[in-house]
Length: 341
Image (cartoon, rainbow, N blue to C red; front, side, top):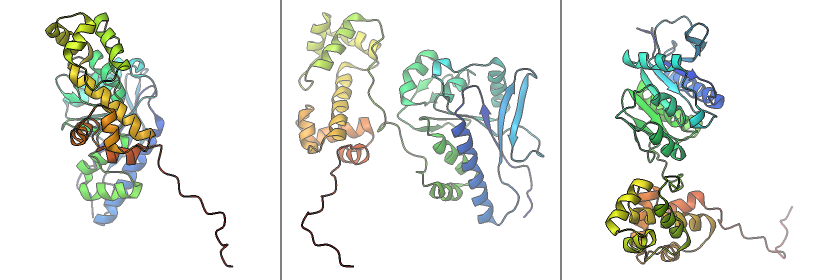
């Protein structure tokens, strides 16, 4: 079966500090997906073009340093910014590369990023007023550096049509499957996921994220309350008690607490309590109802509801996935008879 037109090109952008394992891994994932699709359709010509692109400062333009179909012309259909091995604050914002990405987007190229790659994508300005995700631990840094972006790290991947962003460092697998589904269809995506034994897109980051209170906000009165909350039992704490610790009127306290931490006071306490429950689920074999009680929830059903809302999993599912205190197999009896033979 002859190909009627050039196949869509997925270009993986090689910027300083990019994680090469993700570049090679995504290349392999896309290559296998192309092979699966061609076998299923009885087609010999490639259905995808995969390239690696780097910005050449000396020449002042993008060059393809790898191309699965070097005889083809045209610009990439999708450009992907993969994770960086550097801290986000250190991710370079090379002017030439940023300008190239912005120009390609204006011409209709889809831009995609994974983990810290979202910082480089944000430098182009295309995320202004848009919802985007990154690794959950980078959420605050991204929001501070690019205040016009709505950061949502509950989601592992956000497909916004012309822009796709993904969260964790290993979320290049989710990004790859999303692109495969878009370009080659859901059947090929599922087949490829099975080949690699990875989950199809649809997960979120909440189960993996840890509540990291914002502490470097400069409001000494609010910081005092945060330190106090870390020391006490939380079940019966009230806004009035917190305001008293801060020596502020309750209304003033709530406004300043929200501005400093990003949470309403009681929601902040809820996250602290669920954080303590996570630790107990991971490190003990205590019954879930007992953990709920120890974390201040007199109603186990209420605890389960709040836990699922914050963690994205039920307490039982969370323990099954993350427990380090699973029961060991029962030891063999010393006097057990030896096997014959």
